[in-house]
Image (cartoon, rainbow, N blue to C red; front, side, top):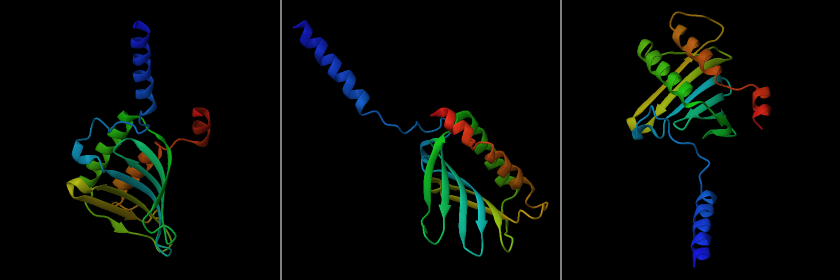
Length: 163
């Protein structure tokens, strides 16, 4: 009888680990109404209407993001999970930057940089676009944010060492 009890306990423990989700937990700095939040940044090619860059979601997952004529709805490939504390810090910086410069849309003829923040559950969407060839006063805070976000992207060496 005791062996049956131990067997049942082992079955329960192993079955729980089999169904464990690989998706990380939602960031603690966010509320449930932010579960669909996305933060994107990268390069925009106006003539091709193409976006290339990165995306972070409410779970701290980092993706390579592309949106172009081949992928009009966007395509993303997971790179890694980020440190939750760092992501929360960057999200706070995003909010501060949006408050400082509420609108920015001045792409260059051939290229532009962008930062996009979206939280559909809160009815929030913001897209800032600027010409990287010029360092204007209007784009100052978004240029700083862009550089700060790029620090989150791991190098190829870091990715190889994780595996």
